[in-house]
Image (tube, rainbow, N blue to C red):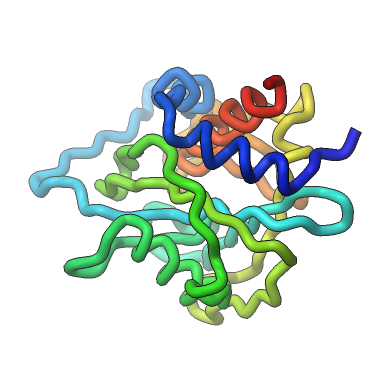
Length: 214
């Protein structure tokens, strides 16, 4: 049975004000090192604040959200799929960061997005970021305009896809071309969505499943 968009938005807004699953939803999606080569991360500075945007909109009978595929580069998250987002600018709130990054990366006007709330703050160990996922929505699918430097392509996931019984898969991947990991993941448009993004999406998935059961 199709999910009613307006009803979901109302229920999500209420649910996001209540205690969240947090680590209990994150941990099942954490990638585990395979073999003796284990990445080590030592950060001398405090985590940098950042935000990502979980942007919901109806499209072709489903409730969708965009993700971005990064270009290949020398950094930690080369080629990975992530939610639109990035580091906070001085003086910005969590929500302002998510909206600005969404506008810069995928071309969605910040003023058009209605905010529902936030998910649990998440520490991204490899890049030393403390990220807050911000959940918002649009009544119609936006016209995307990807940043040509930061975004190779925009993917569209769906709530229906996240809720499938076989949504969570697992395979061995090579992180940073160096570290073999056994990675739980979502497969969206044939792209592997793993790591911090998968962990945050799994919390979102659990929250949505809860409100749909009510």
